[in-house]
Image 1 (cartoon, rainbow, N blue to C red):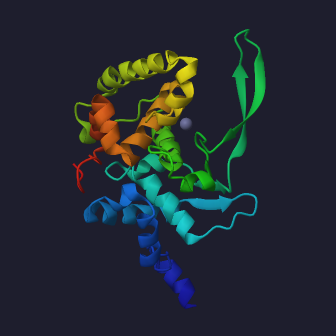
Image 2: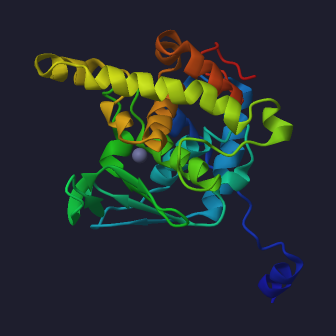
Image 3: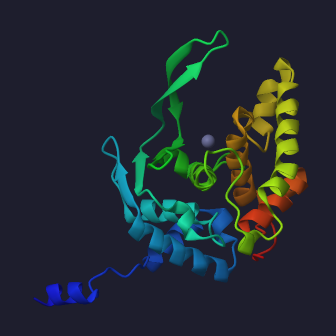
Length: 268
Ligand SMILES: [Zn+2]
């Protein structure tokens, strides 16, 4: 009876909160979060709580889902939209966690124009208008300096909100002022071309050492959208290194995401 009454009054709607201990545990395990200001973390926690009520988590292969896993994904997913509209993650609800890497099927065209169906192992995948699929093992990985599969896949989601994923995220005049898609491309496109040129000219003998020390994963040369997602990983996870190595891109990302993660405990 009371339940029905509360439901009718809208009072039964679960208030979005994250348990203190779980939040501290999640933030403590992610150095790029624990360095953030108290104000940023408070805002991130509120965003993550809303995210948890609007998304649906599921797992594959008997992976047991815990509250801490959901909060960890939510906190990392919400970092890029800390100062952007949460509506960038609208229109879909599913987040699927696999225990480790999973197979995705792709259609590729070879140089002779023949189309092949190929299977590929992946640590994450963002479907346009559909779910985000993540390898939980990779979500926890922290041994590579600028690696973050959650940020990578959710930045693809932001990119897709502006139409096809093309490395040009949607810009809003009221938030981004003079940062128009054209102004974005003036910095982003030459940086992408320079990185592709650099990677293409690494001699075979030096490839292994390059691939293991490069701040940006050479996978970023696949497409402008991958360069955007890989750079965003570095911007949020290893901001000082990204700023030092790619100052123009750091400034561009700072203007887009309205954050300055390399500054000590501060945002713009
Ligand atoms: Zn990607």
